[in-house]
Length: 430
Image (cartoon, rainbow, N blue to C red; front, side, top):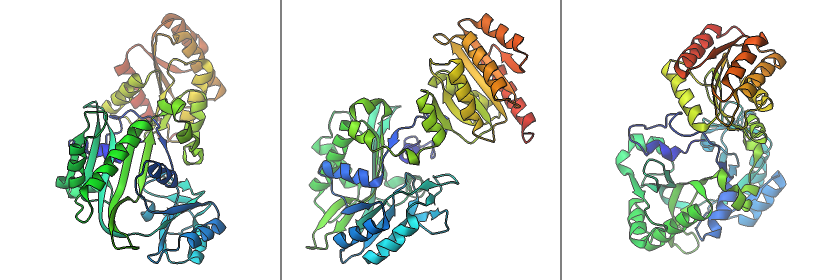
């Protein structure tokens, strides 16, 4: 959900606070697709072939077969693959190999199994393909990312002469190596591109070539409606064929704006829903914006801004939101019930807080949905509802006459305070 690079936009927040960034799900694509996209823009990458079976991995390794060796990389949309492990106990999602036979063996261990990393959650991500890549003779690893700085309202490039590690670690251990550049024009001009290229710390390659790579990356960022391009590492390598040097994107993480799906058909055809939370995939079918969080107070709200404010107020009173759920203008009895089902998929939820400010959304329809969901799902945990707006009196009457125990409020603060109180009281009792 969150770009690692966002963590250092604001020095006051070395790690992004979960409630300071709108929790939208922007499309991510696999590394082999990122490599394909980079190559279309003339951006150098290590040569590689994707494989979906051990036999394909064997054949891919035979086709590549460089003297420097190969790398087998599990294709899973999670960071920290090299330090991860599989649900079978097999260690690491990245392995160095020297033969096609090894490619077969390693891919056999990876394919069809779940890779578990610090970023994947306890269940991990299923690996349905591996990327067989030529190993490069790396002289220096740096870091480069492009994203949008919402505070400055400008695209931002973050560069560091230290790469190959998490940007949070770089920010903590070597903060002076991180340089930030806002892009104020439609393209990156030659002067700015050269300045960024110098900040990467390469010593053997022509800076003009590195600058051209940076300009091409920015063109890709703009053309494809990207929300994030993170190259870690971007490396200076020695070409084993002739001893020359080059700058190569060794690993790439991409994010794309979901609102641009209508004009980015190729990119969105690469979506792999097996890598996404099934509940979030289900939510999209009902036009609900749903993201799981770590707390125990389920939230159902209409409007992203109000949802963020609701979670902030819950935190203010000592509570912890279990999810972000924005039902937008479509808060019907059907979507309310689906929202409750999604919230209850998290067994840690001890209370549900509904906060509806009715304009387009009618409070009586919301009340009908609340009552129906509570009865149909046989809810045992407390429901706290704060309703305001269109048909409010009718909504109150429906709740009052339903016989369902719903704690009704007019104002946000007392409602949030009650939600925290009841969640604490109910904790561990269901």
